[in-house]
Image (cartoon, rainbow, N blue to C red; front, side):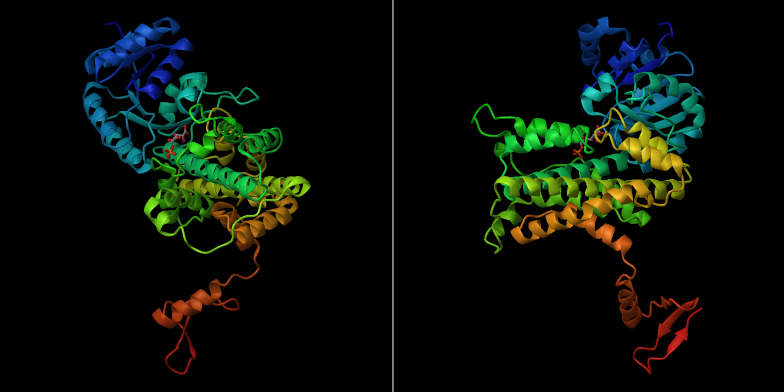
Amino acid sequence: MSSTAQIGVTGLAVMGSNLARNFARNGFTVAVHNRTAAKTRALVAEHGDEGTFVAAESAKEFVDALERPRRLIVMVKAGEPTDAVIDEFAPLLEPGDVIIDGGNAHFEDTRRRERQLRERGIHFVGVGISGGEEGALLGPSIMPGGSAESYASLGPLLEKIAAKAADGTPCTSHIGPDGAGHFVKMVHNGIEYADMQLIAEAYHLLRDVAGYSPARIAETFRAWNRGRLDSYLIEITAEVLAHTDAATGRPFVDVVADAAEQKGTGRWTVQIALDLGVPVSGIAEAVFARSVSGHAALRAASAELAGPRATPLSGAEADAFAAQVEQALYASKIVSYTQGFHQIRAGSEQYEWGVDPGAVAALWRGGCIIRAAFLDRIKAAYDARPDLPSLLSDAGFAGEIAAAQDDWRAVLVAAVRQGIPVPAFAASLAYYDALRAERLPAALTQGQRDFFGAHTYRRTDREGSFHTLWSGDRSEVSTD
Ligand code: 6PG
């Protein structure tokens, strides 16, 4: 077999085959391989006319089909299956070749694999790919990590198949070394969870407090999508809410079980944020909200718990409330992205990746699940001030929250009064208020820690650390 393929894809489930087709449609010769050869044959039989595929039945054939340095994308389940594929292919490769993992791998696994393969001269590139099945085919947002050298060989191909932002820029760029790409994809998913939960809370309020029907809420989301909330998730929310179940004629949203599932990337975001000491409270509440929804036994056992029942508004009052919900949703959304970008900065510092937050915002503008018009503004904020400590320090975003906050608070008051759970809205507002508080009660926490554990405290008026002799004469000693 002659080595003519510029790229190879192994693992031809939907994401893998759509990615392979995307490369082929963009003029690349693509070697395709799957553990069971029937899938490879089916792909070529069904889509062979979209471009040039080289069907490889064995690992050796696959590797031989690739031009050097070889670039092969692994599209299998994250975890052990990825290690198994690497173990199978690495012995067949040569120094300079590039293995690309396009799955949702944990970035620590990517760091380990990169280190191990680097010893053998093989580049390992963990690539976050977002956009679901359709994105993989028509243009995803792509977040590649790995060495700068590997990006030099891989980047031009990724730029060709990636989604393009409205200004024509490809939605991909080199994020940083080793696990940086998968880390940024993980945070993308954390923000995805928060965005989805905030939208769900807005829906709940519109339904139970404004008294809107699903169809009316779909209309409302459509209108919001023409404004500053313009985003893929708002757009598809309107589609889902407008959908009628064919079997019952009822709104689709009323016949689906209200227990949300998760594959785990949102949970990773929160776990890593805890390790890094980054407060991603909105994202965490979104993960917990899915968890609460899935605890059927707990919920059934608590069905008799006392509390208010929502009394829906009507007419102009309902519409005025809906307008307030839009403000609350937008303000909370700014907080989620603020928290996510904080985590990216913290990860980048911890692992010395040098991630450019403006570039991340830029490549999330198209193709990915959290694509949103306001990412243009986040990009502009970081481009103007790459060292921006927080998105909330940007005058534009701070001004928008200042304008939204009365409504944001009013929505939370209504939710609390009427007994509607809005954990992500509430956590976002609490985060905002914590950042703006002149004094936090953490001083008291420090006093308690010092009382029961002699954990010491710092003072506002002097340098150093101190301990009060709580069980003695309560005099203070310097512990430096
Ligand atoms: C994307 C998505 C995707 C994610 C799934 C499922 O960017 O295309 O983030 O990668 O894994 O949408 O996520 P959950 O099952 O965890 O909701």
